[in-house]
Length: 129
Image 1: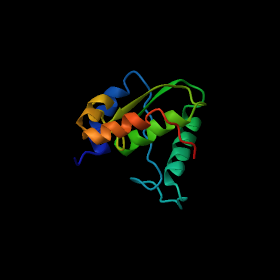
Image 2: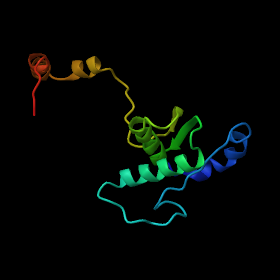
Image 3: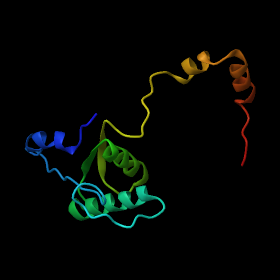
Image 4: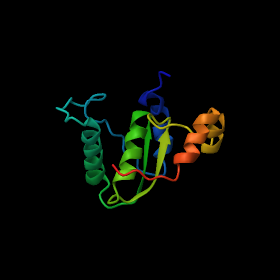
């Protein structure tokens, strides 16, 4: 709620005491230039992020962290990029990821009887599209 990258500036010195820290300003954010985005701007941001990582970190093992929308992009990059030597991902207040508070069975139990019946009737079917 109103927290941005400014909240991390007080911690950067301590975080960098025993590890290198790379802070990235993505195209269109902060002080970076706005670029012409494609129809899928997430791919543009992921490409920019991957390019900076490849340039600055190259073949070293690293942790990737992100806050809010940066955490969303870090998660996407971790899922889509097998060629990066990531040790792990730290997602802080990740934008776009749901927090699971109930199991599927708990959610199913809350549905009306007819919806549960339909689920059980169709759960074994595989529909090809």
